[in-house]
Amino acid sequence: MEQKIEDRIIELETKLAYQEDTIEELNQIVTKQQEELSVLTLAIQKLHEQVKQMTPSNLVSIDQEAPPPHY
Image (cartoon, rainbow, N blue to C red):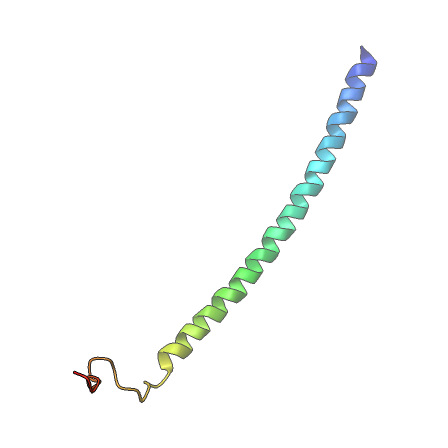
């Protein structure tokens, strides 16, 4: 009986060690993804500001455009 309990404890400790490694690896992945998301969010904000600051086009809007000659 003693041997079985010791074997179970060793098995549980082994599983726990693997789980701790997996959790640490997943944490590193999530941290890296968060950093990448932050960079992408900042890039999108900059692009949004650039688009807002663009000068209007010299093209006439659809409302101001003359109808085609066949009308």
